[in-house]
Length: 242
Image (cartoon, rainbow, N blue to C red; front, side, top):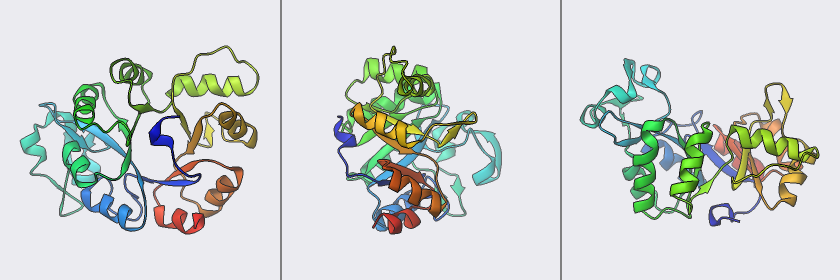
């Protein structure tokens, strides 16, 4: 098992730092998550036009900054001047790693453009034991495993489909992901069941479920035995877990 996954059961992964309780994907938001006891933070990276990786989720700036421009159409010097949520900077990936050197990050590579510069920085900073690479792109995950094999990677869409089939007896696939990170339902199919969790654990893997904000659902998942929950309400989950 990868060192990143060497954790107690039932960890809280603060989604974007806890976006329903703080300013998402900001140093201020991550500081909040750490203060309430989170050791794991889920976040995203996008690249500027000149190839600098930033902590940012959306493809454009309209929702969080009121600017109708694509993120990757702006150079880093332009992005550095922007303030979101009134007075927060959009943090560079390198600044985030420096500011939270004891925190483990689950990082979603949002685009092909950010993949190589982000992985380069993460590798140069030797963050292998405290970063898990995630993506909705199988191709980005394959690239990560081929060129940066020391990193923990979550399973991509095709691997999730395959491992669900394996859990019902079709054990004919090769799975390379280190952990399973899934919603409860996908395309109308219930993924997170007691049987599926047992199957994942029997293979020596861990399962994290996203994005859960209802306390009753959190409690049920804890009782089912999931290893972690990704949530916008980390304080609620922390209270339940304790």
